[in-house]
Length: 301
Ligand code: ASP
Image 1 (cartoon, rainbow, N blue to C red):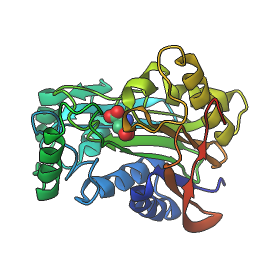
Image 2: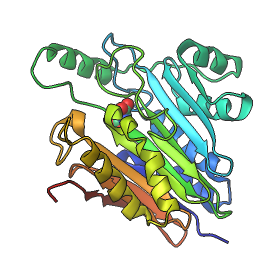
Image 3: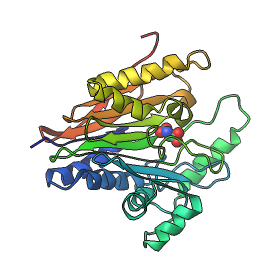
Image 4: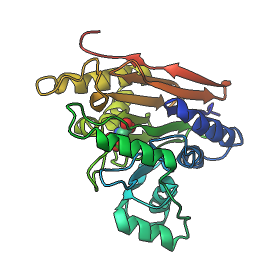
């Protein structure tokens, strides 16, 4: 039997790891563990970039993106630009299991969620409205609006099955209808039982240019450890884009990226182009939740 393991992006990913690891320890399947972990973060109004209390777009609506991927058959369920549902990852799960499709967006996704009786609920909170007002006052300043982050979860269960999932409100003050990397297979997430899984967080426009999560899983398939794959994958994208944009040692919020991966043995790796990225992880062999700062990669390292 394989030893289960689970990891999630950012310190707020701790609750995802806590909930997901309880299920994995009971022998519940990996896709349930990843979904449940993400759900817990989505309903926490204190997490200001995911689900309830998420960051509003330019016109003040909270538009959510979420996804799940099953590594046994590479099946995907994803939703983008969804409003009015506190748990978009639940819609993603239903897309994966109940439709012949992989991605639903906007009203189509919302109607589909209604047809399956998923709970609607308010996403705006007092503090998200306040933060939106402040950001709007800053429009026109030279720096781009700050604020984003994704809960991304990767896990391996004791049957050797792997899954990945994401959920986010995307970039602050995004244009209505903007879709980031998080619901795009290969960009914000990828999972394959044969090699491992990866998720990304940070500026989705750069992450998607490099199909970063797929690239990291392919590096693991070629024999890299999760840590090597994260570092090589992210550095490769920074190098590839160096003539058009400097993503090395990112200081600006809009240039920050981070990746998190798990290999088929449950080893976890992570990398970022800045020093702020932390993730939570635990495993059957070391059942304590660790908060770990990721390795910083860059051309000048
Ligand atoms: N990747 C997300 C997006 O671009 C935001 C983030 O994770 O910081 O929508």
